[in-house]
Image 1 (cartoon, protein in one colour):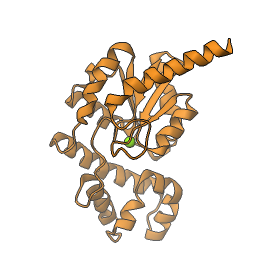
Image 2 (cartoon, rainbow, N blue to C red):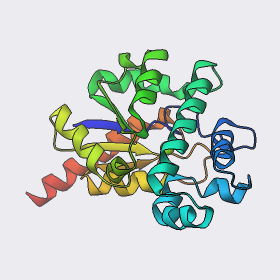
Image 3 (tube, rainbow, N blue to C red):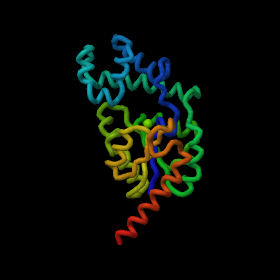
Image 4 (cartoon, protein in one colour):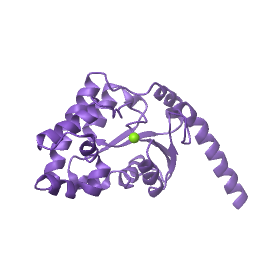
Length: 225
Ligand SMILES: [Mg+2]
C-alpha cells in the first residue's frame, strides 16, 4: 500500500492568499498584463477551479482571444512568483512533516500535486524531501493537461501504477483531494490544521489514523469470512 500527499497546504506552507502575498501578486500581474482591472474579484476568477467553470466567459468579457492565451500568461506569472517565494525562503515545509520519517520506514510515501512538475521537483530538492518520498508527481503546463489534475483521479492512479500497489491513502486539505482520492480507489484523509474539521489536525496524527483504519479493515474482513 502507498500513502500519497497533496503538496500545497499539506507538506508545503505555500497557500498564502493574503494581499501582497505571492499568489495574489501573480494573479494581479496577469490582470495587468491583459489590461484588466486589478480587483480581488477578478483575481479570484484566475483560480484553476474558476477558470475551468468560467474561463471562456472571462476571455470573451475582456477581449482575450482564447483560454490558452490567458492560461499561458497566468502560468508564466504563477510559476515565476512561486519559484521566487520558494527560493527566497518565504515558503517552507510545515514543521510536522518531520512526523513522516517514521511512516516512511513502514510504507512508500508519494507526493501528488496540482502544482507544475518543476515546482514539485524544486521543493523536493530544496528541502531534501527525497529522504521521505519515493515518488513525486506534478502537472503539466498546458491548459489541456489540466484535465488530468485533481479532482480527476489520473495523477493518483499514476502514483498507484508507478509504486505498484492497488490500495492506499491520500492526505489532502481540499474537497477536490477527497474527490480525487475516492475516484482513484484510495482512502481520503482530510487534514485541517485549524482544528475545526478534517480527519486529522496535524501530520503527527496520521500514523495513528492509519493504524486505526487498518485495524478496522482487518476486523471487517474477519467478520465477513
Ligand atoms: Mg492543497
